[in-house]
Amino acid sequence: MPRLRAVSTADLPALYAISLATGAAGGDATDQYVDGRMLGHIYSAPYALLSPETAFVAEDDLGVGGYVVGALDTHAFEARLEREWWPRLRATYDYPSGTPPAMRTPDQRRAFMIHHPHRMSGAMVEAFPAHVHMNLLSRMQRRGIGRRLLGLWLDTARDLGSTGVHCGVNAANHGGLAFWQAAGFAPYDSASEISGGTKWFVRRLALKS
Image (cartoon, rainbow, N blue to C red):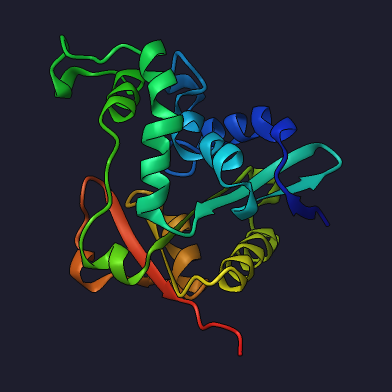
């Protein structure tokens, strides 16, 4: 059984690789990207570097095969990304201003996200201020590893004072949709419709007495 542990900077190559290998609605997105680091730049690496206290990996004899990352205060984390993460990437990746949105490649769509990151707002993030991302390679799926990894993250978030967490799931990722609901996350009522291809889920975290 893989061991779960806190993330380290040495895990960054694995986080980038897992983000790419699961980036097509849970499937392998390698063939879609010229730059295989684009997804990791957005969904995994910044958490390992800026919020390591809420970042964990699952590791077996083949290496790191899964991760769970997140932030306790979504608004504060977005502000920190704006100060410490996006500027360097914006200097590396051009804004795709000359290409109409419908014609952009996957790399260009992620470059747009780097220049114009989505900002969470509204009642959902106020009520459920933490957020979480998790991905596992196929060798670690359907073995209870995801449930253990998420449980570690939720326990940590609760111990650090979080009372509610949200996550976004690609609407085409049917396995992911089933997983999060089985893990106690409920579709967010006011955002239950698909928004930009994403379904939103939330979970309350009761503080330990």
